[in-house]
Length: 179
Image (cartoon, rainbow, N blue to C red; front, top):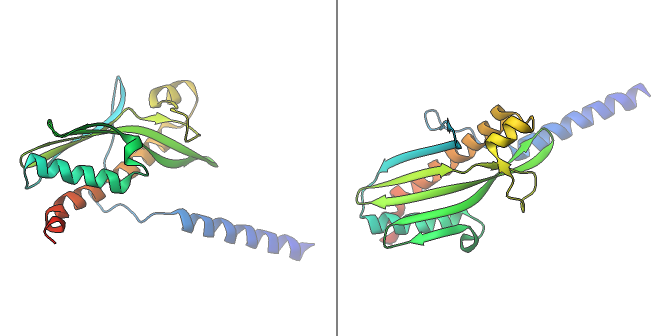
């Protein structure tokens, strides 16, 4: 009986460690992790990035990045305004809370001008099903007893990884276009 108990504990520990290793992501490089700003409407993140290129070139690069990084660009792009160089995307990050998988729907706005682009994440929500629009972060934290720190931290990690990828793509898009 004692051997069975030891075996069970070792097996369970090995299973948990392998599950954690399989789902872990590489650490975010120092200085590249963002912090969401909290305001009366919830949380948001905004940044202006200087980048060589015309507004149209940057817009086209942003559009390509969205199509490569969201499961179905046609489903998530809410505004595709080439004339005013503006994209609005409604997407979702995944995370976990206690032992459940969660989704964090959000809005991403990208606007471009000659030599720069603006990124804005806002309208964060919380849900435990991918087809539900969920409830706002503020309602989740104020009325449902959900840990603000845990969920906001996961959103910040997801946005940080997304921004690293977006900035890298935007910086290299011109080189890729000249193949």
